Amino acid sequence: MSAHPRLSLNQATIKYAPLAEALRVTAEAGIGAIGLWREPVAEVGLAEAARMVTDSGLRVSSLCRGGFFTMAAGAERRASIDDNRRAIDETAALAAAGAAGSAAVLVLVAGGLPAGDRDLVGARQRVADAIGELAPSAAAAGVTLAIEALHPIFAADRAVISTLGEALDIAEQFDAASVGVVVDTYHVWWDPQLLEQVARAGNGGRIASYQVCDWITPLPADSLLGRGMMGDGHIDFGPLTRAVTDAGYTGDVEVEIFNQQIWDAAAAEIAALTVRRFGAQVAPHL
Amino acid sequence: MSAHPRLSLNQATIKYAPLAEALRVTAEAGIGAIGLWREPVAEVGLAEAARMVTDSGLRVSSLCRGGFFTMAAGAERRASIDDNRRAIDETAALAAAGAAGSAAVLVLVAGGLPAGDRDLVGARQRVADAIGELAPSAAAAGVTLAIEALHPIFAADRAVISTLGEALDIAEQFDAASVGVVVDTYHVWWDPQLLEQVARAGNGGRIASYQVCDWITPLPADSLLGRGMMGDGHIDFGPLTRAVTDAGYTGDVEVEIFNQQIWDAAAAEIAALTVRRFGAQVAPHL
Image 1 (cartoon, chains in turn red, purple):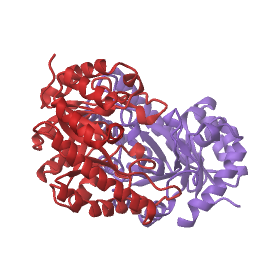
Image 2 (cartoon, chains in turn red, green):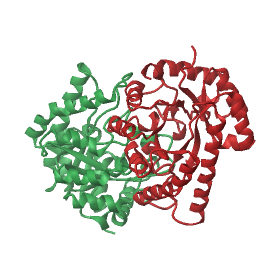
Image 3 (cartoon, one colour):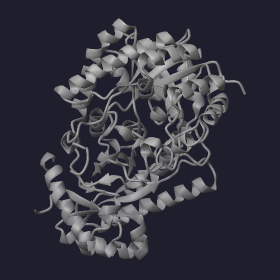
Image 4 (cartoon, chains in turn purple, green):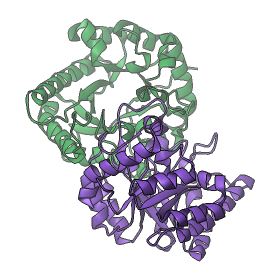
């Protein structure tokens, strides 16, 4: 099976592969795009990473990730904002290094409640404030900040933005070229308002990234690693993929899976499986 | 510390206590009400359970639980509807046996996706259909069916109703005396629309039960058991409790906790801890 032309392999799916291997495996699987992560990029340095990306011939579909700015004013918050500005620059450089059709999209994970803080409303407001600080830098760099609503299971400790509607409430305060949203099936599949919020995102030109993986049960002991390959879980990829398509999204579709069993397999095997499952579960609806 | 007059101990919090012990421990802790479960009631038989409840002098605040009716038409669905009718009768009998101020409230957990079924919209519709079948029986028995939105972590395998707004969308199709909702802090605390939906529930007279426990991290390996004693986790009980109060809810407030460490303690200790934590975390906002 050849890879669907819009399939992108998010690097987290082959977590143990360093950047060079990740690029090679992705290209050898016939996949045209890759979603990068900052840590493996930093391992080789940004300039070298950009050269490697160019050499690979792959498109870059996004960089993961910025965010983690729910803390109150202070040194820690300033450091987070500064780090996000660096991430914006990295996003621009890597997208420029990628093949034509690359997307300068920085995925933002909001961050959880600060230690001992139970004020969810306040933490959410600080996310909006941080994005307000970063939006001009993103605009200047030609980067879209993509707010990712994470599943409510992570509301306390990882991301206080829990629904696509809430992500849009923030994104819509800014220019659509600078701030959009990620639609990630794993995080939003349960939402009774999902289809109307996808349509809303499309109308506003806010869908900056579409990521797919499955919700599997039973959840593993480490709830961070409960993502499954498409077809192994409970998500019906048809209606949501069609909604994202109907909403006008024409970009790459990333497969991003955190799963120990998958990570334990060889990267090339994972890539091949990703191609097959994407072809069966997602591609027919694009 | 004496127990708040509106505190009710849900029997699941002292899971290993048989009915007789649960009633005794609750009363001895100075708690005025108990939320019962069908299984320990069935162990002694309904008539004997009703006598024991009357002898205890406690109010009954709810019966857990009915529901689990997401399956398609067929024998299994009929059996579920029939079982729910029995649960309605049990609810009426136990509330009648309880002290003045008891509530004839049957908590409904929707059920998850049937095996191999990925049609979440269809499963949700079948929940509404089942409640439509049961509402006349509830009305005839003077029982309120209380739809409980469960945290989206359970959407696949336990309850396809994931938000308070969605529970209200169903409840509002029926008479408020027969169909209401449960507001359970653990399940709904993350919801960005929470306060407006609580107000909506109050305006319609739909809050049939208010249950409290905390969201703790890290989640335990068994995600069903990740509920914490109030004060041990991330939930701010003030705003939500005040919203429920402002919405006009004047009934008992149940503490319902599934947590292995808590279950491993002696029932009397759990009851005493519940009294203290309820007094500190919830009572000031009632």
